[in-house]
Length: 370
Ligand code: FAD
Image (cartoon, rainbow, N blue to C red):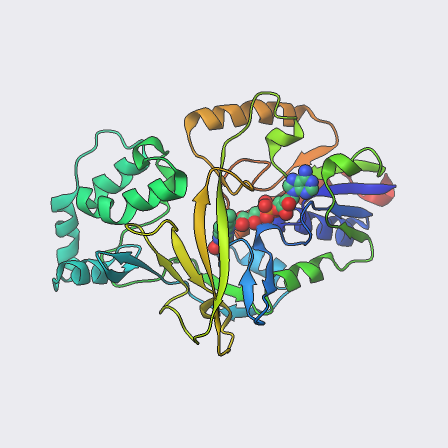
């Protein structure tokens, strides 16, 4: 008899397994339908011996010291600041849009003080900012919106930005200075030996058992357990009884090239051309020295594994119906990106899992006292 069955060996499931085993001494079984642990953060050595991310580039960044302290029990870190370029009008320019982006694209030599009024002169007044188009057009105007955002968003989401909630493009800021970092969080780094190694250490507790290639449905009735943590898609847990929650998927094409370096930064976005949205070159993230280089091309798709919840009001309303069912389930906790139907970064999921552990611990009391 296990105290806990945990569905999903990603950040949500692994953090909870580690806490329940190490802090409460409880017996935990973690199952994942994939053939590996780590969820979407899984990385592996490819045939050339280069460390790649199976599900696209994962860059760790956070402002929460507590989350860094927690994960640092299982990994050391390689400092890394993420930089992204976009191929626009045949040029590679920094994204988020900054002073250099504008000066290079338009052959100008504006100062930071001059750039704010330059944007303001192009920005279109939007009475109420509702959509992703509104966010961009009201800050930098329609031309930059067309160059950087419209095509990219249409590829990524299969929808026009005017049909998507404001939160999608609100994630990408616009800067008047020369800061070309993609993220501005206080802590930005990669696990020194990769994510999978970090997960292995997290799950290497004698009270934790891990079963990969194991589907929840196939084990739920045959493996006795007292409580359940579910980190899969919430609609699937309830047999999609109100209909499917829509997700956007991706197809990853991994390839190795016989050159030491393919592009100047880890990620290059293609907002105007190509069927793929971006190319990732992993050596920039890992610092690995190698005569060859490995790349991933990302092709967005409607079919496939669920990656991104699609932020539209009707989808959120459907999620809320499932959430009401979830809240009524006894001895089941729903945690993680798929179970809470929201785009969360890794640090946010670690925070969510740690908070869930504290709630469980408070609710159940000390295991020895029953
Ligand atoms: P997941 O990692 O999805 O884990 C859930 C696991 O549950 C999966 O392994 C799945 O196989 C398993 N599962 C589901 N249903 C079942 C079932 N019925 N039976 C058995 N197993 C099941 N975050 C960042 O902070 N920085 C980044 O740079 C970043 N880049 C990203 C790039 C891409 C392309 C994507 C898709 C996400 C990115 N993220 C990034 C987000 C990050 O992947 C998530 O925050 C994190 O992986 C969420 O962890 P999780 O445990 O909630 O879910």
